[in-house]
Structures are given as C-alpha cells and as structure tokens.
Amino acid sequence: MSLKAVVRGCGAYLPERVLTNLELSKTVDTTDEWIRERTGIEERHIAAEGEKTSDLGAAAAKAALEAAGMNASDIDLVVVATTTPDLTFPSTAAIIQAKLGIEQGAAFDLQAVCTGFIYAMSTVEKFLACGQHKRALVIGAETFSRILDWEDRSTCVLFGDGAGALVLEAQDESTANGRGLMGDYLRCDGRMVDLLYVDGGVSSTKTTGHVRMQGNKVFREAVTRISEAMERVAENAKIDVRDIDWFVPHQANARIIQGVVRKLDLRRDQVISTIAGQGNTSAASIPLAYCQGVADGRIKEGDLVLLEAMGGGLTWGAALLRA
Ligand code: UT7
Image (cartoon, rainbow, N blue to C red; front, side, top):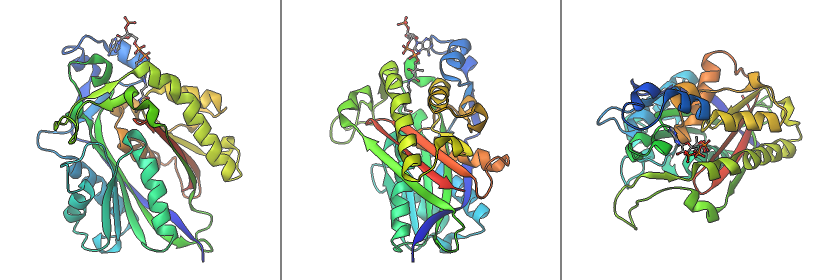
C-alpha cells in the first residue's frame, strides 16, 4: 500500500491592523511609489500588541480544520514553520496544539525562514507516507513585525504578519485519484548566511535581534535558484512546468515572481499573488496564497499546483501537488 499526503482543507488568518506604504513614508525615508515599483507591496498586516504567532497560527488552523470538516481529535501531527516563535521554548506548535484542544500525536516547529512551509510540507509528507501519522496540520505563522528594525527602510517596508494552514491526510494511492503531494526539492547553502539573517539569538547575543538583509544580493540569487527548484520538481514528476494549473510562489517581491514566470515561460494569469495586500509574511506566505486561490475559486480539486520559496540560509525549494 502506498500512501499519499492529500490536502483536505486550508485556512488563513491576517491581523486586523493594516499598515499602508503611505503611513510608513511618514516614519522612514521612503515613498509609496518606491515600495510599489520595487516590490509590488501596497500594504501589510501587523499583529496587535499581545497578539502572538500562536494566536495567528491557531486561528488559521481552526479555519483549515473547519474547511476539512474535521475537529481536534482527527489530528495527530502539528508542524509549525516559523522564524518568530512565541518563546524560545517550548515550540509554537506545542502552544497551538493546546489552543486547538488536540490531545494526541506529536507537535514541533521547523525553521527554514521563508522556505519553512516547503520544508514543513516535505517533512510532513514523509511522516504520512510511512504510515506513522494519519492527519497533520501544517502551519506557516509569523509575526515578522517583532523582529524588524523600524528605522531601516531597506527591510521594514517588506514584511508583514499572518498565518496560513493546510490539513494533510494520508490516503491510499489507489483511492486518492492522483491527488496529493507529488514531489519536492529542498536546498540550503549556508555559505550565504550573511545575506539575510537576524543579528541576535539565544546563544550569541541573548537578545532577539533584527532582520538584516543585503537585498540586491538575495535578489540576484532568487530567480535562478527558484526556477531550478521548480524545474527539478516538475522533471522528477515527469511533467512540463508549463502543464501546471497554478503557480503559488513565496511573496517576497513581485519582480522576482515575474522573473520566474518569464524564465519558465509560465503565464501571468497562473500566478496566485497576495503580495500587494500582505507583503512578505515569510513562512506564512505560501499557505496564505494557496488559501486565497481556493477561497476565490481558482484552485479546484484535481488542479496541478507548483509552490516555491527562497529565504535566509540561503534556503530554497519547491513542491508540486495535485489539489
Ligand atoms: O523572503 C526572503 C527573500 N527575500 C527576498 O527575496 C528579497 C530580495 N530582494 C529584494 O526584493 C530587493 O532587493 C529589495 C526590494 C529589498 C530592494 O530592491 P533593489 O531594487 O534591489 O534596491 P537596492 O537594494 O539595490 O537599493 C536601490 C536604492 C538604494 O539607494 P542608492 O544607494 O541607489 O542611493 C537604496 O538605499 O534604493 C534605496 N532604498 C530605498 N529607497 C526608498 C532601499 N530601500 C528603500 C526604500 N525606499 N524603502
């Protein structure tokens, strides 16, 4: 018996507070025009005082459970991709598990910065495929606003807060109708740590630190590495990248997404983009965009969807699934 990891439902949560480019231009030396032209971002959501990553993640997970028609007792694995945990320990996954009233199974966090959700999907797929767990919540949840230097215009305009979640279920291949995760490709090249990092941490400064990025250097790496990952995943699944129905990219920069679309000869109308209203929500951006595509009726059962991300590490990767 071969088991597939099939998406049963998805959910999203964005904090109420919206921060516009115009508001930002009153506190740092930037303009709405610069941010829109260079990134595609118009506004982003910011978590309220006291609103934690686990609150965002639990809200998204609840919505995903509802969409799947499941409840807490159905879930035996919770994996949270996050770089902005509530606490140094225990994991945000443990906190979310308790908030959801899940009393069985395992829970842990996974840290691959903006590529976290792809890493988490890949990891969870293996747990489900080997039969060890039956139904998993895979959550991407971030409060990046907490680690931004709000005086650094080169980073503070880029990020936002939010959470997205998918319920993945192990289903026998013979009854899954081709649905499920079809493959993934994960990479890391730690020699590029200095391009994008947080200048604090438990064992170094004993502080949380702030995001530091050599944006143009990351930008130069992005299109080539992301495209290569997407092509590799498609090739392994024996499909042509152009045969996909939907492209759900990590939402770091509209110009990176357009560069990938051009390089791989995709169509612009295949892209699910949330960047204008959400900015870069790191590990949450892929499930948020996926949910947007499902909610507005674009992504339908049976559609072929290609996901990709790149982030600190550098890490990067792609995943292919039949919805
Ligand atoms: O999600 C994780 C992965 N992250 C990414 O993939 C991000 C990749 N990088 C990027 O998206 C882009 O590099 C940025 C959006 C961060 C920056 O765009 P850029 O076109 O690469 O600009 P740049 O860094 O080369 O800076 C160009 C100019 C500089 O001024 P000078 O030196 O030419 O006078 C910057 O100081 O733009 C200036 N600048 C700004 N100006 C107005 C940088 N940030 C801002 C700003 N407003 N917010």
